[in-house]
Length: 168
Image (tube, rainbow, N blue to C red; front, side):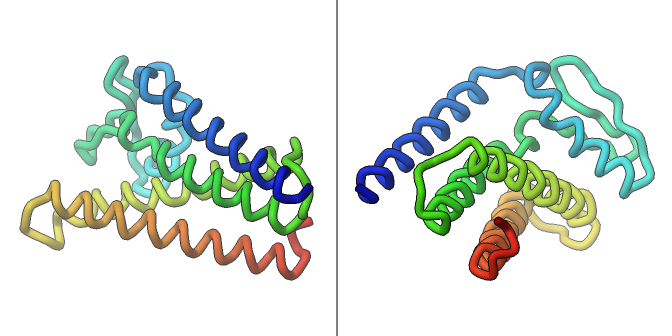
């Protein structure tokens, strides 16, 4: 019985992953504006600057000469985090997928995505002043490292909380 529930949970998570990925792929910047707005506000607050929304472009920060657009949304990070945390929560609770599991997973994934993306953007803003080689390559490397760090750290923290019954 558990194996059947396990397979069902995996299929549901994969369906959710593919469905959100598909919707996001066809969405425009204007349609995902709500997803990048908080990231823009976090960057504005930390850097003490102001961004303005430009239709079809994203949030433009004139002081930093930086646009937060669809590629800065972190949807891949969000989905990977959502699926891994939801599945880990399911394994710990040893019961079929529930609305509570999904709500907790979505909230945690949103928080982790905001933190990871804000960190990545802040690294992108400051990195060119420290390094003088290919900026596209630097952007890819620092993005990979930031996302990998956040995925590993967040997962380990969540696992620790679950094992110690802190996150019930």
